[in-house]
Length: 337
Ligand SMILES: *Cc1c(COP(=O)(O)O)cnc(C)c1O
Image 1: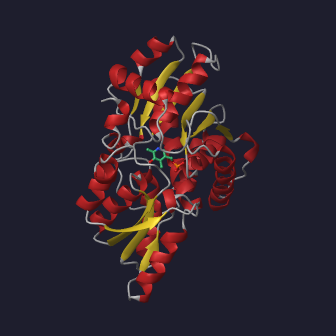
Image 2: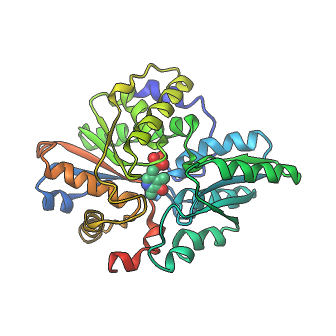
Image 3: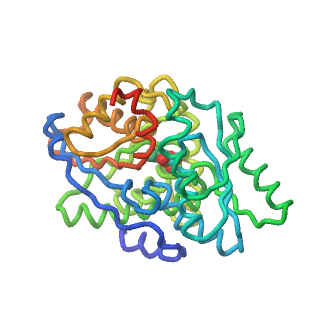
């Protein structure tokens, strides 16, 4: 089944910007600290370009389409510390495309002055993106589409990269992670009981779910809601998974999709005690740099599931480090670091 998924994915052209495969490494000290199960980390923070992260894997597929349409400008958006728009800015620099970003203000209350200028905000400027400040309205793609409209009226050929690079093609791209984990875990001598990661704009989980259903059928995909909107996340995962299954010409039963609520803290972008504990554990025990908006909340969810007894001590669980490390520098004060 793994070979079949690989063959289906090989029909999609991609740019090859990301450094792949990303490593799959044991987290021995964290496993011991928590008293089992055996924990592993899939290093999606190590995808390379512009300090890496999970969006680059999607952009490899999605930006191939952008180039094929003859686009000269990428348009995307996100909150001030969005990892997604920083990865779009990085890819645009590499491809020699102009990059315009709708920067949403008001979704997150800035925890301190560094939030506005440091981390991803600094990198967006470094990579040469043009930033357009817009108010957050709750419509993730509205201001991005408006910006693209204005740019095309002024003679550019914009390509819209959706919020979080989440669409059915982005989900297809994420199924490639399952092929990598299937190869890597087999050569390390285990089958993961679960792959756990944080879920937001949803195409990451959608791709993992479609890929695993086909190539790792005994592995459960567990998404941790970090948006404090578990129903919306679940609905989006189902929608993108169904779209990806159509593109891959595979059957898919969305009844298997699991989005876990209760670990997002009070709101998107607000770090709570469990997140801060998870970030500290990952740093001190495994030298991993997680962030307070995404990967830290994802690990907080995994730690809570382990403490709740979800898996036996001899199970193998893969945590995906989805990236986000630059955002850590915008939250130093909040984390007491
Ligand atoms: C975007 C992002 C996620 C969530 O991935 P989605 O595909 O949007 O669900 C997780 N972690 C980090 C660091 C991200 O930037």
